[in-house]
View (spheres, rainbow, N blue to C red):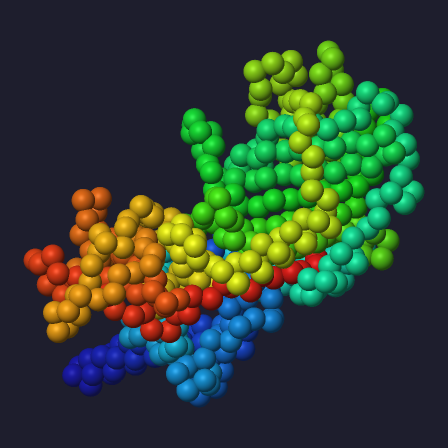
Length: 471
C-alpha cells in the first residue's frame, strides 16, 4: 500500500514539475523570430519595433508607423544591441537600451489594423496601456493601389516634382453659379475643422482644412490646438446638375501638438498622396459633391460630420458661405512649411511657449521622456513663470544664474521622492533653459523652500527633423 502511495505521489510530483516547466508568457514572446511592435491606437506614430535575437539580445527601433522596417536603432551604452531580461513574474520584459524599454504583458490582443492582422498582448508601458503584437498576415492590395512602400522618405526639393498638374485635362464648370471661394465648418474624426474651398470656372478646385484636437460634442468652445493642415486639389466632374470633386493631390502637414505654441506651430511631417495612372489611387476620400438647395450651397461627404450653422436649411450638408480668404497653393504650402522649420532650427526658442513646445516635441520622440523623467504634456502645464520666480542655489549656497526661459508640466508618474516642486497649483516638474541647455529644478529638502537647478544629461535642445514623405 505504501509503495502504491509513493507511486501516486511520484506521478503527481511529475505533473507539477511538467506544469512548472511550461514556458511563461514572456519567455514565449522572446523565443520567436518575429518582429513585434509596441504602439497605441492605430500605430500611426511613435511605434517601437522589437526583434529578439540570440544570446538575450534585441534589435529595437523607433519607427514612423506600424510595419515600417526603417527606423532609428536604440542601442545600449556601448552602442551595441541591448540585452533583455525576463522577470520571474512571467509577464515583464526589460530591454536594457540607453532609453530602457520595460513593459508587462496583460491580456491577449488581436486586431486588424488597416489590413494588417495583429496578434499579441495588451501591455502596461510607462503607466499606460499599449498594444504589443506581430503581423500574422497582410491583406492583399487592390490592383488600383500602388505597390510602393508606404510613406517613402523624399528630399524636400523633390516633393513638388510629384504634384499632379490639375489644369491638364480639366473640364470647365457647367454651372457657373457653383464657382467661388467658400468657408465651412465641419468635424473630421471628432476634430473640429475649419475649411476653405475654391472652385474655379476652368474645372479645378482646391480645399484647405485645418483640423484641431479631438474633443467631445459637449464642449462649447473649439480647441486651439492644431493637429494638421490638409490641402486637397483636383478637378470637378459635372454630373446631374451637381459638381463632384475628384482629388488629384492630397498634402498633409502635421504639427507637434503637446505643449503647442499656437502662435508659432512646429511642423512635424509633410506627406503627399496623389491619384494618377502611374501610382494608382492613393487618396482615400469619400465621394464629395457640391450642390445648391434653396439658394444655398452645400458640401456633401461621408468623411465629414456636419456642424449645423445658424442659417442653413439642409441638415445633412456642410453649409458653404462666401469667403474673401485666399488659399495658399499646394506648392507654396510645402515651401512655407520648410521655411518655418528652417527658422526654428536657426532660432528655436524666443519665449517660454517656444521652449515648452520644443521640449514637448523632443519628449514625443523619446518615449514621452526628458532624460530619464517621464512627462505628461496631456495633463497640466504652464508658461507664465518668470526666471526670478525660481532662483536656484548651488551646493555651496551660492545663487545660480537665472534661467532664460521656464515652463512647468505634470510628471507622467508621481514619485514621493521625485523631482517635483510643490506650487499653489499642485506638484509639477519645472524646466529651465540656459545657454541652449536643459535644466530641471529640484528641491533637496521637501520641507524647505531651497531649490537648485540641475542639468538634464542626454537631452539636446535640438529641433526634431522635419520628415517629407510620399505615399
